Each structure stands twice: as C-alpha cells, then as structure tokens.
Length: 422
Ligand SMILES: [Zn+2]
Image (cartoon, rainbow, N blue to C red; front, side):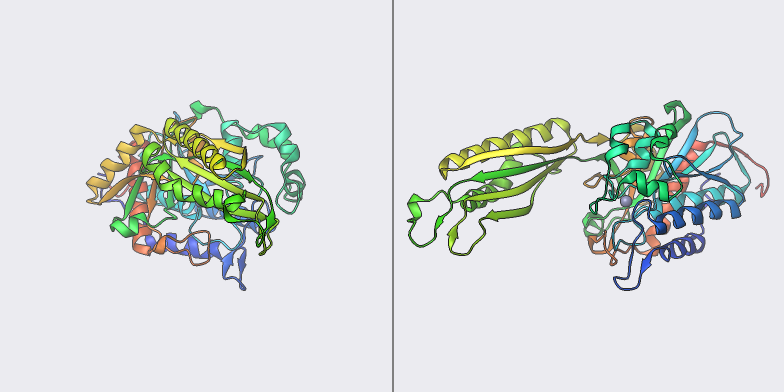
C-alpha cells in the first residue's frame, strides 16, 4: 500500500536550493550559517514559515531547535526525523539540510496521500550542530545533556559567548535547559545525511545504513628532547623530538593492525616543532592525536597501544613523553531495530546498500540515548564535504529521501486512506 508513495524531487530540490541562498557567500561560493548567527536565525525563520505555508505547525524551542509537526492529535509517541541547518564556515548546501528538508517532503507526501498515520510525525532542525560553540548543542538540550556552567562559559573561537549570541537571536541561554523532552515522547528517530566520505561512491552503492557512530578521543602529545646546534650535535648524541614523532607516525598502521579494527582511525593532524628553526635540532614536538572507532573496547585498546608505543619510542630517542587527554567521546551504536527497518525497506525498493560506520559525529548519536535511532547516508561526490564543492547527485538525494519516507511510514503505521483510495 505504501510502496506506491514517493517523494517529489522537484519540491525537495527547490527547498534545498532556496535554503542554500540564506547565508550564501559569493566570495567562497559557500554557505555561512554558523550556529545562532544572523543567517542561521534567518534560515530558522524561513523553515518555520515553510512548514506553516504547507499547513503544518512549527515552532522554535528555547534551545533554537525548529520543530515542525503533523498529525499532532494522534495518540502515542512521535516518529521524529531530522538533522541540522547550521553550517561550518564556507560549507556546502546538503550537510544537515538534506535530513531536515527530506523530512518536510515526507510530511507533504503523507499529507497528499490522505493516509491517516497512527503516530504523530515531527521534523527537527537541531541548533548549533556544527561546533561553533562545541557542537550538537540543540540535540543535547532535547536529550537533557546540557548543563548551566557550560551554557555560561561556552564561546566560539573569536571569544563570542554563546549566551550573548543567543541573546542577540532573541533566546536566553539558560532557558535552553527547558528544551529537554521526555524520552517517552519519542517512538523512533530517523536521520538522512550525506556521507561526507568517499566509501559509497567507491563501492558504487546509493545507500549506507549506519550501524554505529564512531567514538573519538583527542590527545595533545609532547615529546621533549633537547634543542641543539644542528651542525655540532652528532647524530648519535641527539635528543631529537621530531625523530620520535616520525617513528610514531610510522608505527600507526601497525598499532591499528594489532589493536584496532577496519573502523579504526588514528590521525596526527597538527604538529608544532620547537624551537622551529632550520638549523636547530628540535627540542620539542607537540602534536594532536585523534583516535576513532565504533567499539568502546577497541577505542580503549587503541589508546593504550598509542601510549605504550609512544613511551617505547621516547626511551629509544632519549626523550620525555607526556600527553593530555582533551576529550573522550564514546562510540554510539544505532538501534538494531531501526538498522533492520532501513535495510528491509532498502531491499523492498531493490536498492544495493552498505551497512557501515559513521566516522563523523551526528545529531543521531545523542537521539540514540533516548529513543531507537537510525541513520542513512547518500553518496558524496568525491567524498567532499564541509566545502563549497560538496555535492550529491539529485538521483541519490531522491533515493535517500524515498528510503526515509518508506521507513518513516513503517513506523508511523498508516491505517487507512482518507482520499485517493485505490
Ligand atoms: Zn551534518
């Protein structure tokens, strides 16, 4: 009965293009909608109007999340769909927006079909996902993970305080705590997102069903030796901090082979050598080390292994070694039930899909703490995202939105058709 329903790509296309003009920067040709900025708030007002123009109710909660809803009179918990509409500086037009606007399109299709769903539907555009003030602030408000100290102190890299920026946007930071929603409000949460990586394109599959979102830890590591004259210090009498770092980098593939999984990632992303002079043996190497995996135990094993290897290398090169753990975010599995629903609906639609991890963080990882949650990916051309060059083919957008629609219908349990009855 539901199989004959499908989204209208042209409507979704129009919405995505319209939204991409809000905060558009002609110089970079990218989207600038940093959380709680003028452009971000304009986009939120645009979205509320969009829902209203279509006959759906919509509101902004006290954390800045926009929530559109239909069938609110239906009893029972809510089928929630969503993602975010804020962006990184010079971002692309699909990141987050796709999951929100595809949700709106699902609502339109269900409305037009006359199907009477047994569950209410809500579409969430979460606030400040991208990390201007740390990230995933709106969804954390919904699941009750915000705290007053953080709201008081959070600031962006230019030292603009979250509470001041929210004030400018007409919101009170502390009231974001009131945005919390009881877990029993939800029946399930579904997020459609672009992959932002190269895997689906490489394996030529239109859909990724996310099984888990990687956890991530960030260390700042210091290898400390002795700065010395690059001419007079013989090679065997040096405490060269860079040589230690180079050795460690070389060991990364082995660490993952022995203690990681095919989902492990270890990255040295930022390096500073001191004193940083061409004719001086570097006395100190300070670098970031970011580790990821989808399994909490493997993440701990990776961290242990990095520590062991670093300490062995430090001894070998006559260095001291210290590190500071800046953050540790546990991996989050998606709901088995929702993974199965997405997979089953994809099979029904004859789609080739890949069950895969998400290496990037998403709103879904917080929603998963309160309700059965699942996520699907559509391919990113060239694996590019967080860039004006971000692109996903319209055909893949259509496929992803249709899979979202079918899965949402499975959960919303339409009982009968009011009109267009077959
Ligand atoms: Zn995103």
